[in-house]
Image (cartoon, rainbow, N blue to C red; front, side):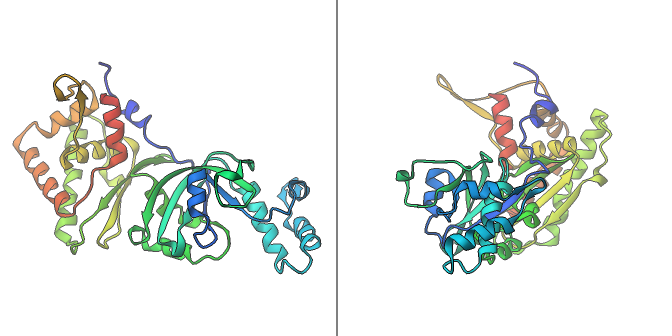
Length: 331
């Protein structure tokens, strides 16, 4: 079995491009939400506006919505009261929403939000018989998870009050990233998002005890001569219950913290064996090294016990993205 290194783990961790844009796309009051999900698309109306008119609005610097606005005014006469807005929405959908961007779509009354990643930049043509949405201008999306509104960061509520069909959500990127991944890399930093599920009041004691993980990280860094400075790691708390705790720092340091917490919270790193059932995997490399380190002496076992109780009290779930990577590598 090959040795599992930091690089083999971080190569599997999701990387969010700093160039990605974020969008909130409405679904006509939830009418076409199910169609968007089942067909793997987002769509916008104005079927009567030909693609040639959209192309005519292109300029060397991007596009000029006033060109398309004039075409829409001539095409719809008095039926379209806001041709400037219509042109702006069509051009944003066509040219600004690109492959790799993140989109959010709401159900009726924004009771639930589903996020997805845009799979193609150009508009696509699909067989419309597969759904009830009549809109021809579409883009392919690979959908991720659906989140109840009550489980969203309250800061995102502001986004749901926007009225346009296509809304730039770059100002909410920090909060959206935490929806899409529990462990990810963006720029030169790693982000570890812990989901606090408890509905009880979160006390200062629990938050203070959570810092025990930094003691373990410092010991591990010293033991392995890694030179990690824990002062470079920041913690951001959303102290409502439930809420999230976000660690931000160097990729190596956050990977170690993530692996430690995965062990402490009780992640099951085993695989199915068709003959004898579940068997634990013993493998060389970073995962085994951290596991052995945590079990090496009584002082660490006490710290591990304190952390486990704190994680249980806060009902913090296992960082799933990292655990999935570790299981994949072990298997």
